[in-house]
Image (cartoon, rainbow, N blue to C red):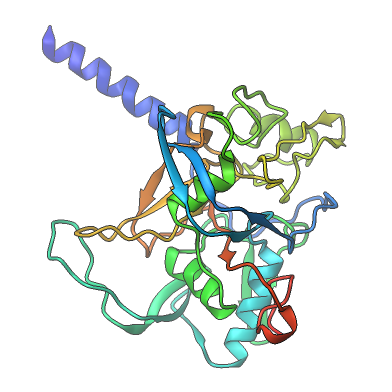
Length: 325
């Protein structure tokens, strides 16, 4: 009897995992209806220093004792392709065996179980060109985005590829603590960037992705939404709420998981925040986290960058749009 109960539990548990994650797509390149959300994907906002509630039970008050700026949205396919083309022309990345590869400085190895050895090298996977669900392609003329996906968040980018993008422009990935402060603000203990409740009008997640892809895009496959999609606009009869964080950030919950910077001793996994279009609402809560090895890239994983506040953009090699001067 105990064994039967255990088997039933395992079946239910595995069913939950598969349903929450969704079926892995078999397609590679697709086109989609182009939607202009009118949100500036190259915009930045200031996150002021100060205390904020951190973690699941919101009883711990943490502090970030410096100001920083963070991208209003995730990095888009178009932004990442622009980077790839520049870096490729400069010889800073390569294309090999269906992957974009590049440099990483390496890090200390602790010899712990399941930890990867990550020495200095220039052959780390940045972007996966040959995986199902890929939106970026490469030919002898360079990199390009599938039509309609230009302003969707870049996916299938590894932690190394997200870090490489940030470093190229003199930026950083946010730490978990910086990310949570940007998502929650400092005045309350909200569960989501916009408040304590969630419905299908607030974010792209497992509950409403099927409705979005059929009603808005008229497609059959799971999909991201353009950055800033949930801004109060109605698209083809699908009404959205203005789902922003206290600082005005979009997509801090749902759409794609976001890589963070932290590397903890004795482990090589990197952590992700925000949940995605393949997850349930519980994974979209501010304190939720996921993890993966830095070589991993998924169809529901992206990123955004942070930087120090710009006092004199003219004398800085990064302008207000996160572009090289």
